[in-house]
Length: 142
Image 1: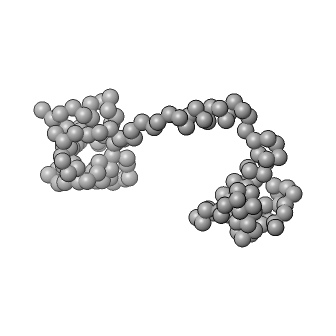
Image 2: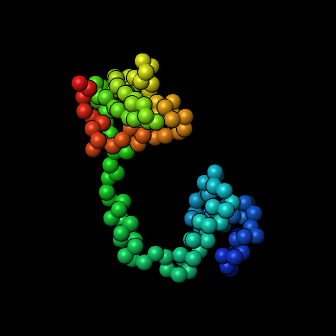
Image 3: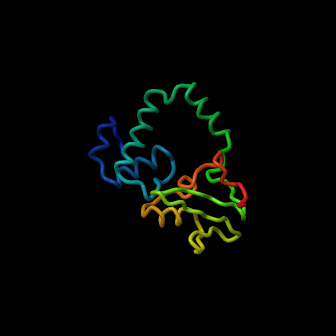
């Protein structure tokens, strides 16, 4: 059994020792893709939490309340027939919402992000690039 007395001891531990310690602390295997620095930080937090009593009750209550809320949609539901307008570098770009995705410059796309990337030359979130629902994303095309 790996026994350490101080969080500082974690710095000298290799991956196999960290994985063994994780198993001992959490009674389950460590996730395979975690880096050694992340394993050290996570284990250090757990050790300190157990030694000093963990998070204050009020913080735990706040976290529990937050977990009860359902997350809102991250992308507005766009309906076929809708039209998105965006001006970029002095050019107005018009995107039509179709059953299969989107049409821009007479070409079909499956995502708004692909269109935003073509327009800007950089990776953008398509919904963010074209605006929010408050700006009329769901208005039908005239």
